[in-house]
Image 1 (cartoon, one colour):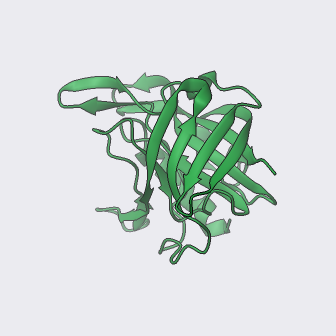
Image 2: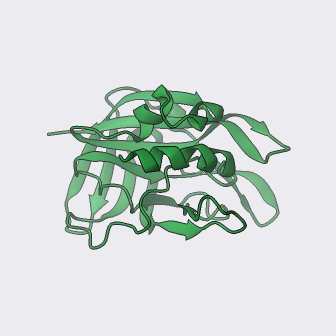
Image 3: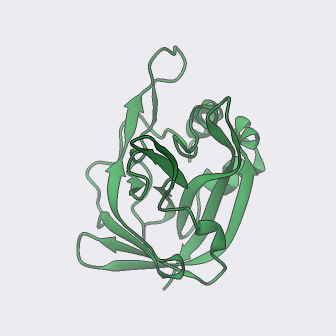
Length: 203
């Protein structure tokens, strides 16, 4: 990951949370196109009975700022069971950290706190499987290694350990499931923490 991406994370963390989901780096100005490897189409986590299609989400313009022009797009908050692949990160199975977004909860019509696709990911344990279906008919199988909860303020420093652990380059194909956690700040309308499941590709 380039230094520029890590620097942009500082602002993004403050702008995203789960009613608008967890933070992620903005990436380059354009998403990966065309994708050389099979694109992800579905996500299955048997241990917590989570299943969703995967929609690609890219970058969207951020209005009213002179410093950051684009931020990551996330699944619609009124479709909390929908997960997405950040298409500016490697496709699952490629070298590097592939990022999947999902809500811990959302708002459907006037109902707030409706459980989201990642509502139970804090129940995962090392060794649990995460399956990513791809458009060539194959399935990339990942095994959970660990789960971390980070205060979002830790990501205000692009050189911080938290930032590099979640978004830094990796030598192997890895997966990150990213959502919100901790207590909810009603004034900011955002959770205070970021919950991240780390997983590695099984050979």
